Length: 111
Ligand code: FES
Image (cartoon, rainbow, N blue to C red; front, side, top):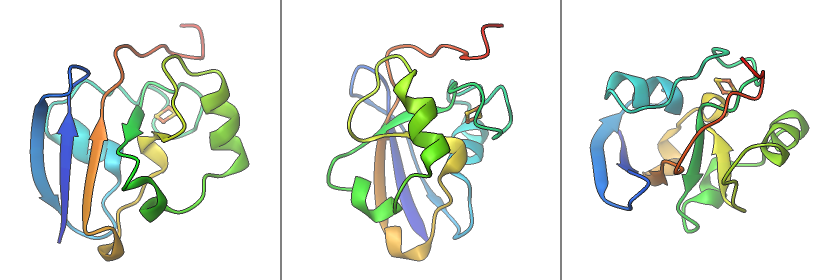
């Protein structure tokens, strides 16, 4: 099992849970009722699934695709450890993961 802690934009713990390998981070956040819309359902077209990964945990998630990097270039509140949670599939090697929600999301599709 993988342990995942979600922090709100204020840095306080919003949720903490366990996840099975193969779980998509966006789906986990949505199951917990966290405000990640995921409007494009993983098509990498909206960035409403943006999360900021704890710096110590960021390398555990592997490299970003060029398309994900391109989307993040236009995402508000992006940081060097930002990810699109729709592109993060958890595996056992992650162990423990902490991510923070950004202060705001914007739908990059402009709708
Ligand atoms: Fe739209 Fe992730 S759900 S970019």
